[in-house]
Length: 250
Image 1 (tube, helix red, strand yellow):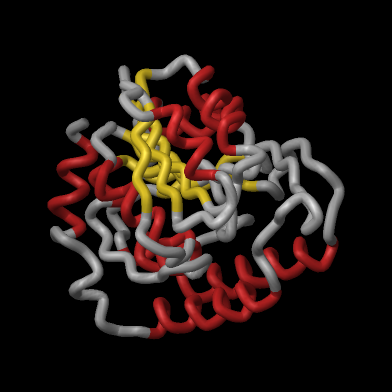
Image 2 (tube, rainbow, N blue to C red; image 1 turned 135 degrees about the horizontal axis):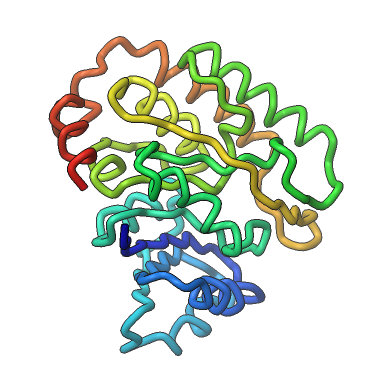
């Protein structure tokens, strides 16, 4: 099964790492397009991205002002043309060498969506116990609401058949994207979700880590908002049964 990948890279003030992550993504041996969405960077990131003007494989989109990771991802999803969409952070915490593991359940015809888990045994830097416990708590609460048995709802590495992610109306502008998309996927009972172990090379706040306790509180709010809202109609652009027929025929 031959796939074209759309790799969406949301970027905000990543002048030190964005060139390297693009090079690492380029090195993976797949047919691909790289969609870089700069979310109003105030450092030198946009100057770095100018080198990709006219590039056949790297498409750069500039948000007018900083709106958040969720808003940048929405733009990338809208522009994607590949068979499969992969979210890739620009901060080097997640390695594109994990793409084969992430893609295998889709290539095998077993999955429509794959989450890469930092807590299933992959190698990783030892950092921030309280962050880990916070992530596990948010995953637990999300699982309680969605009845999914994920180990890492907050992971960056989420892989979607394009028809699935482009079928979901998304509205969270910041890190609320993670619980929002998980809640909406859970309502799509015909869509199969898998989880696989990945590497995780976490960085410190001195290295430029951006997520804070405030984002944890926001994620908690989003878990409740998107799971307790009974108005599931309007979440999707086509009925789930129709979508199942579409993705299974790929």
